[in-house]
Amino acid sequence: MQIERYDGDREALRPLFALADDSPTQISNYIDKGEVLVARDGNRIVGHVQVIETGEGGVFELKSLAVRPARQSEGLGRALIAAAITRSRERNGRRLIVATATADIGNLRFYQRQGFRMCRIVQDAFGPSTGYPKGSAVNGIPLRDQVIFERDLGAD
Image (cartoon, rainbow, N blue to C red; front, side, top):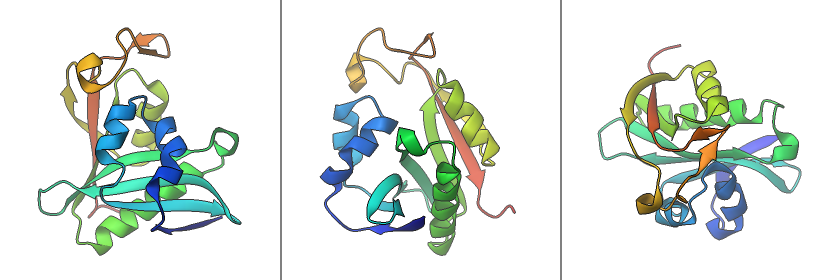
């Protein structure tokens, strides 16, 4: 497996972006932003991570991360996070943030295991006004609130 910068047509990656975000509207708003790194197995792209600038000096956001379902639990997500951290540090990043649904128990566990810490909750971040279907749920938990995680890039 190899991780490299992706400079191709990002629309070709839309199915991966859709694994990470249930809102086509939101994906369209950010798919072309920042930098995308992909994990390749031969010529096949099996995962991606997107890192964007936040506008706050030294702070980058991990905007999208996904690994094809057949390749999950192999450490690819962890490797993509490590590559995003390295890339953010190369760009003089001090912090890397990521947002996810408070209902997504798997993501809460994953990001904490990667050294991220919860720093803020955004209530009612998910709903029709932001492009998510009314009544959506994850793991049987209503999809409403968002948690922001951060990782200090000076640590380690």
